[in-house]
Image (cartoon, rainbow, N blue to C red; front, side, top):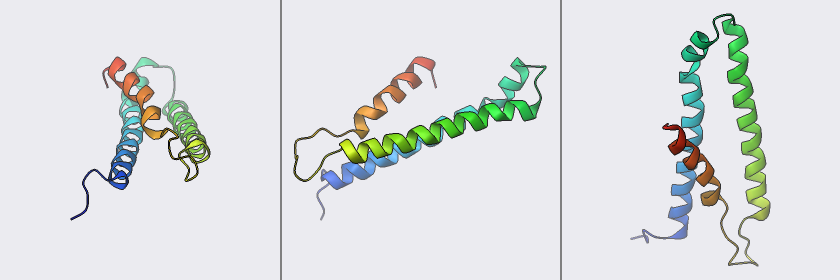
Length: 102
């Protein structure tokens, strides 16, 4: 029977949580679209859809940069005690979600 507390299982669990948080973040912005439309009555749906597109593009670009930084600065075989980057990277997202109530 595999060890339940193995580092690989923790890595898979943290990666799954990170992917879920990213999905949830984008979904919340899309769900807020009708409220955006009501808040800006002079704006067309086409103009407001650019807000969603800009948010998703910026989010994806930062996600790629953060992934590359994690690859470069993450734990390596020759430096066994280097701290992990994914878990601390999720802290600001969790803090923002708690502060905004989402």
